[in-house]
Each structure stands twice: as structure tokens, then as C-alpha cells.
Image (cartoon, rainbow over all chains, first blue to last red; front, side, top):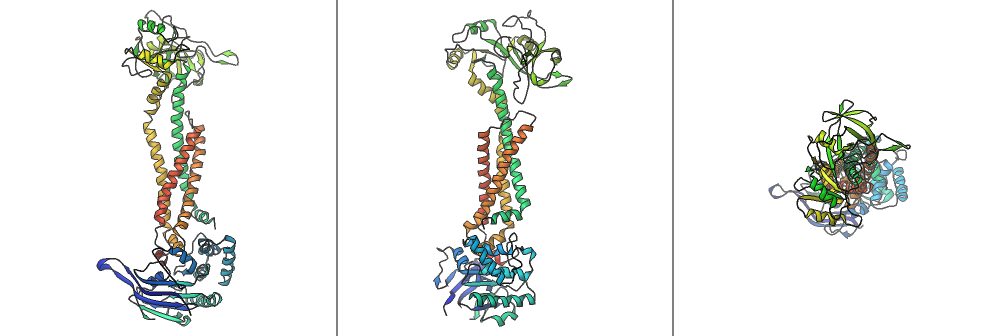
Length: 224
Length: 382
């Protein structure tokens, strides 16, 4: 199977001089299309930095990155285009825009990608129905539960039909029932949309859902 | 989602409304101050232009017409009345002095205009309403120059808007002066009414009965250019001679522009305040939205997209603020206790400049906003 994301020798340092921290250290990583990968490790081991590099939010100090087979040139390429065309993000704290309804929060991702409003509305309606929020289209984030917000967040991540969705601790703010529901939903969405998903998590109980688990320690992958 | 920025504004409506209101008040103040100054200029001009004089003469070194004092000397009068280029016998002395008459027991402000009845400087007849004369003109003195034996009664023709009745008396320089007529209203700067009286009475009441006047005024012959006549007389070096245009420039500078320098400065400060207000509020809003902007960037929004969202808000708030400010300034002007003349063209220019200042400062704040690191999306709450 072709790699959706492939990083070779990815390195990211923060700080200068003696205070330099190597958050990601010469990491080689390959995520195949349709995989559900979990990246696990202790706090500060570099998991979030790694998905930020893979998701083109951070630029690596060294190494090469390919997404969907295409090499990424962080200097000369507009990474925002890659982010909205090929990548979806789900955040630990959902980060829905408080002034928009659930439907509009999904639509905004497509607005960024210059999708026409009526097409965006159709797609957002479809996705929110898919994640079980057909009764919540016009609710604002403040009117939704944590689990519902995370569902909206997933729907937003899938809105532009990304090659891969990166989820950063998506269950960290959910109770165990909501976590189980979310994981079931993720499996369902993955089957439905054939999307590759990489989840950063501490949650050992989620392991069973993964096709592959990547363990990190001190900025390095210890079990590829 | 063309209305995304509107939804954000609705969510933060208290701040949006306060910002727009702040701009509204500042712009209306800027325009109102301009209108007050413009009104003062119009009022400064209207008396000067109403005299019908082309040439304004004062003694060399006196500081100029309307400012200093010149002695009325018979020889001067004779010279001016026969001077080449001037209409024969058109030269006339004029007192133009600020006074504090007591009207119905209250001290008030006024300008005393002392002139020779029938000559340049004041009305030739009283106001007529519905065919009826509003009283009569004051009793004139006999001589062109100062003569101690030339006493006339203390009579005054007042501005119609002073609300005085014919026969009423006002106190001026400890003397009772009888109101004998009303003149068409031509207020001077800051709605100061004009009191017209004989030049001798003005000298007696306000100048200690000395033979001084503020200026002499005259007309030029119909086929003469006032500028050339003025230059010819000015070359004599014992008198300062000004044309109407020069006099208007002098009087506006003396009565309006110089005293209003602080107001001009205040107008610039208000502009600055409007710009800082928009910039500051955009900046504070941006700080509040840092995480939101980070999330938008993380999910693929370009700097251009984020800048567009912020600038649309800045432009809309600024536009609403300046337009409301323009409207409010006209409302304030109508209700103001003094004459305010907002010039429409000038107000449009002020509105445009203010709009640019507000948008410019908003743009500077928005530029800071787009520098937000999208990594921020991985931390904290919106």
C-alpha cells in the first residue's frame, strides 16, 4: 500500500544554545493509506511535535517529508494549502469557533478551501448526520456536550476529504463512555471515507482500535 | 460563508458597538470643531464684506485694521478723500471694539461698531419687517474727524437677534445708551452681536473720548484695481493699507486661526485617538482571538484569509463609526448654542481621512494577528 505520509530523518529543535531541546530526533515514519495509527508515549516525548511536523504546522529543522507521495518544500510551498487540502486536524480541546453553529463550524473548513457555500452546506449536513448530530446542526459549541463537540471536530477534520486526519488526544476530555463512542465513530468514519487516521494518545484503552502503535521516547520512535 | 466576520462581530457585539460608538463620537467632535471654526470664519467675513469697503487703512505700526488704533487727523482724512484711485469722499473712520454692555442687568458680549452714518462701516438704514421700519438710525455727529464740540446723544442700533426693544436702554462704559433701531443680524465671531453707533459715541464710551479709531475704510473707483490702489497708498509708509482680501486674511488669522490653534491641535489629537481606539480594540480583540486564529491557521486558513476576516470587521466598524459620526455632527451642529457651519466637502474629506486612519491602525493590529503560530491550537482553550 502507498504511504500517505512519509517522513525521513525528521528533526525539530526548540530553543538555542544550551537550552536547545530536540523535540523530534531523526525520526523515520511511514503511515500507509487507510491505516489507523496510534502514537503513544510519555508527556514531552515529542508526539504532538511529530504530528505537527507531519501535518505541516511546524517545519522540520532537518529531514524530508512526503504527503501523498509528493515531497513537501516548507520554504517555497504554501503550507496552508497543503493543510486544508490534504490534512485534517482534531484537537484535544475541540477548538470549535464559539460564534458558529455545529454546521457552520464544519463549513468553515470548506470555506477556507474556497468550496462554494451550498456545496459546503450539503457536505457539512452529510458529515454531521454521519457523526450522529443531525439534531444539533444549529447548536453552538456552548450548547453541545464534550463528546458532541469532538464529533463536530471530526466532521470538520473530514470536511475537505483529507488524505490523513491527525487527532491530538481526542479522548482526553471525554469520559470513558464518550471515549468508546468516539472510537466507534472513528472506526466507522474510517470505513466510510477510507481515511487514514493518526491519533496521539495516552489512553492505553484505545490501543485495541489501532492497526499499528508507534511508541515514542525522548523524541525518537522506539517501536516503528 | 461570506458572513463569517459578521457572525464573529455579532458574538462580540458589545465591543463592536462600543468601538463604533467611540469612533462616532470622535468623528462628530472632529467635524463639530471644524464646523465651529468654519462658522467663526464665516462670521468674521460677513461683517467685513458687508461694509462695502475695498481699502482698509491704519496707521503705520498700529498692528493693522481691527487690531490696533490709529489717530484720526483732519489732514489724513482730507488726503484720503482726495487720493487717486479712491472714490472721492468715500473714506470713513471706523471703530470696531469688543465691549461688555449690561443688557437687562446682565453683562454680555458685543462688538461696538462706530462709524459715520451714511458712510461705509455699518447699515445705512434700519431693518424693515413687513414694510415697517424697526426704529430709526442713530443721530449722526457733524464732522468727519474728532471735534470736542460735536456731541451727539447716546444712541445705538442693535442686532435684531439681541431681542431688545426700541426705547430700551443698555449700559456701555458706565453710560446709558438708548436702543433706537434694529439692524439685520450679522453676528461676529462666536455669535457676538454688533452694536452700531456713531463713531464719536464709540470713541467717547470705549476709547476715553480720544480721537482714535481702529481703521479708516474707503472704496476704490470703479475702474481701479483695489490691489494697485492699496499698493500705491501703502508706499507712502505712514499708513498701512490693505485690500478686502488681505483684511479678511488678517481678521481670520487674528480672530479665528490664532486663537483656535489649540482646537486645531485637538482635532489632530482626536484623529489620533480615533486611530488608536480602532487599533487598540482590534489588537485587544486579536489577543482574545489568538487561539481562534491559531486554529483557523492550523486547519488551513492562509494569512490572507485571516487578514480578510479581521479587515472586513475593521472596515465595517470604521465605516459605521465615521458615517454615524458625520450624521451626528450635523445633529450636534443644529443643536449647538453657537453658529456651526460644517462644510460638506470638508466633512467628506475628514470622514475619508478618518476612515483611512481607523482602517490603517486596524490593519497594523491585524498584521500582528496573522503572525500567530498555528501550534497554539494544540494548547489551551478558545
